[in-house]
Amino acid sequence: MTLIKWDDSFSVKVAEIDKQHQKLISMINELNDAMKQGKGNDVLGKIINELINYTVFHFSTEEKYFDQFGYPGKASHKNEHAAFVKKVSEFKDKFEKAEVGLSIEVMNFLKDWLKNHIKVTDMKYSQFFNEHGLK
Image (cartoon, rainbow, N blue to C red; front, top):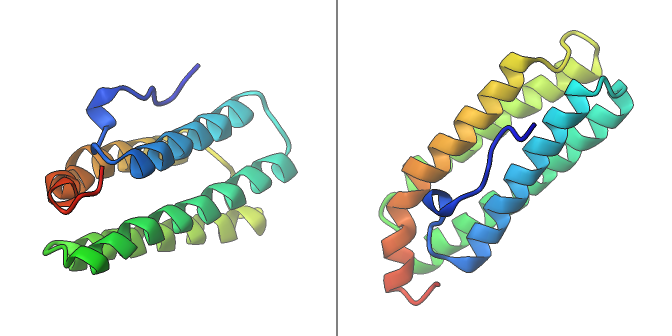
């Protein structure tokens, strides 16, 4: 079962960023499927690492445009990115030390954070980026 389904309500009207958001959603769905299928920690760990690495790549894309265009909301947006990376990295460390397992709570956190971040926080830059020629 799909945890998050992409639809137009997620679109920030910037093709490059929409494509990256679709990839993040796909990765979270892949992680959720692997967890529900009882895949081993080695498989789950690999997917978690890929998700973290891709998230950092995606955030750097957004932040590059914040700096390039002088986006006024960049400080608080960058803080949200940093807090998310910190929280997921802490989870990954605990997962690798077998202190926590992948759970419905973790998946719900990832789902809720991503949906809220795209539909609320990222939507704030959509028009700004479009006005600066990014589509």
